[in-house]
Image (tube, rainbow, N blue to C red; front, side, top):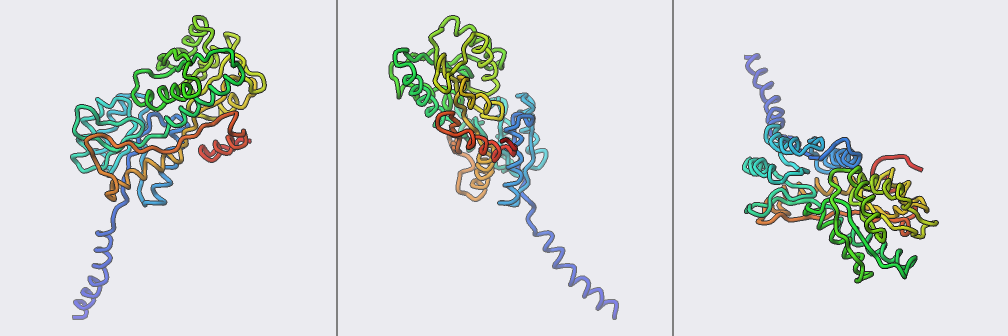
Length: 343
């Protein structure tokens, strides 16, 4: 009899603990796609996403590295289901190839969002929410500022602008190329636009493009190099051609702006004798938090999981300018966003 009573007591004590363990909600698992985890921006972005998601939402974040390979990025989408993820924020280059995997994940009731480029669009009746940086606002501001600086220094020399980047990429066109041109034209409606030249093959291609351009059109004076790796080639070409110069912040040969402000560009932008004078700062912290918040807004019902057209949500980007931001502030921004210890 004593054994029976003891057994009943033990069961009574264990049962609530077992029930509590069974009902405790497991942490949400989020797949955080990056195009290349070797890139310092994406490293900082993932680090912040992992920290922020756990601290604010108790969610776990896992990096899905695209390794700068479109095929790998597409294969990673299949792993969202295979690895039991509850949500994913995608960063892929081939939206067409990625669509079947996205639709399969949605069928499993997994929350799917995109970063930078929508994954479902024309021809599909389902769109997923997309997080983007406010590149258009900064591109416009850089174009307008460059035009003002050039006209102040050379009122007798007409503005001739060019962009080097991805002329056929929808999001680059809408976020960088087109608003930059509008910014320049807002200051000088008579400015000549030579269009966007394809630099998608990298810095060596950008270098050759600029070398050819300044030979054929030596009057070009505003250049938008639409990624920091392209800017390496752009500035090398200008230097080789005897250009790329300023006189204590006053334009002599041209003004160049870039994207992806980093420690390397800090040196050029704040060199008073270099024609690289502005760069778009894409903040990994705000970007990471925005991507996580968007998933949680879908989970809570604030944002629709799907819609006929992908909804776009924009997060802050920065205009890092020699003329409007001090070097000290730029250094502080880099240290805060990337965890560096620059002086």
